[in-house]
Length: 217
Ligand code: ATP
Image (cartoon, rainbow, N blue to C red):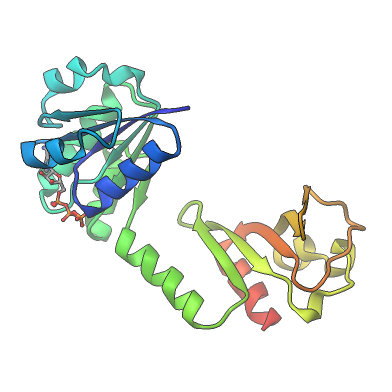
């Protein structure tokens, strides 16, 4: 169980907070708008009305005890940047901040965000991949360069071993797990065979993953 602070109760912040709370984490939400705070009060661990750019307010919620902080302030760039810098400086290990655009994102990184996300853009990429009829079931951007894909093995791969596919040498990507029916093989061996319909969890550079996946269609 983690202690998570979510600042900003727009659509993004509130859905992050509600989901984490439902998963059993301890979630404190903070917004300067008291109506939004009241609406969330019964759906998360704690809800406080406060300005996240106010150091005293952050200290009074015990900011240092949080494992993760999500800064989900969109329109007020100044508040987003100040809150990110302050919360990082006050000792939160992992600070994730939402950006409106590239410049905003770059600044957030400079002031200490460990991860910057662009929800609309990332959702757009996912939807496009889904609509393009790929074998991709799940797509997670781990960093700007690396991703994790969950791909359903097409006929092409059936009966082949990882040694035969030689993905590491050919594409620089790694199969980290294979799901075959109810069975999950974590860190599979070179001689494990793939069957059509198996789920492959693969990590690597996004461009290499795309190149490999395109070849499967
Ligand atoms: P979404 O797209 O997720 O709906 P958004 O990107 O449009 O949201 P905003 O509505 O600008 O984001 O901000 C989200 C919330 O952040 C608002 O409810 C706002 O009250 C809150 N907020 C803005 N500045 C601060 C601050 N300094 N301290 C605490 N909360 C703040």
